[in-house]
Image (cartoon, rainbow over all chains, first blue to last red; front, top):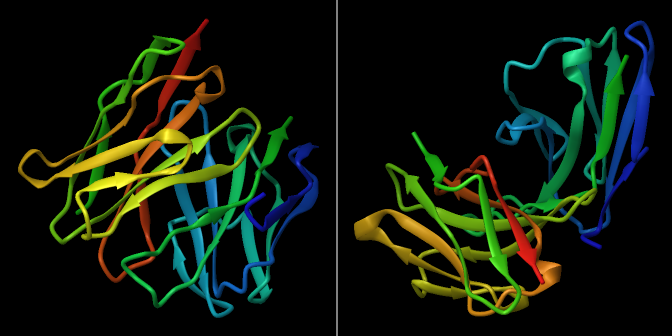
Length: 115
Length: 113
């Protein structure tokens, strides 16, 4: 285990539903990330938080809303998603300030299916 | 801008034979380079990383990679494949002094008995 947990592991939702993905890290890191992994596409960075502040929003549609209440927890709130949003959503954490070693530790992901 | 190209989307080897997964990078700065592995239904796990120290980097599970600046390559190798090595492998580049990682498209390694 990497020390990064994600819940739920699987989620099926309709386009009108509202759901949230949760990520928790037990590594004492201060940077957390959301990635989207779709079939046959490179991993896409969605959001970056450093010390609870959002430092990167990679042109993500507003139907994805991140929340970082503290350095250990990261949420991704989902509403009115589209079928093309179906993917594996990965959370990661790292310890910023130790570049160039900026190794990221990944959770197991949430497999999201939008019907 | 940084980028990585993984030259093979699929590689198949027999158990006990060498593994070579190819990666070329493009970077304007002194890069940090990583290889991550993803087993089915699992997250990504770091195999090894290059951070401007030794050019030959040893990682977990017998994998190693050599940084070749003249060829802008960071190929991943293992002398003898094991069935448990079957997975997706990602080559990753990071720009110095940032926390952004740029992922390649991945190489799926199949290992046959």
